[in-house]
Length: 120
Ligand SMILES: [Zn+2]
Image 1 (tube, rainbow, N blue to C red):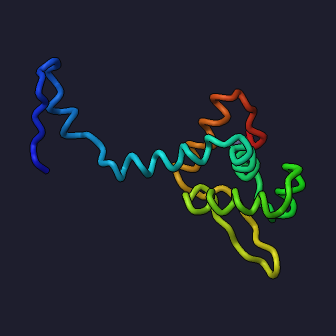
Image 2 (image 1 turned 180 degrees about the horizontal axis):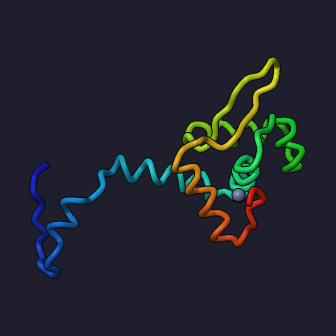
């Protein structure tokens, strides 16, 4: 990558910072994750799936929402890779993805909002 030079020289380590500047695509990926947890309803569904694997109807019942409304949130959560699904006969079950990002999101939610993790 071409070496950037800033017009003003205010700090001594800006060269090192610029060398490590994340790409816009990296930032978009992270922003997409934060977008998922920026919606209270979706965050509540995600938190639920951090602790159990459930089908759409049971998730909807737990959230007191309609199946289509829950399905919409599950689709976007799955597209971001935060949850995974598996089909068993007619049912599709959802749970938190087994990734470091998903685990971080689980921990961050509980730390920030002082929610007790039922798995601990
Ligand atoms: Zn937890």
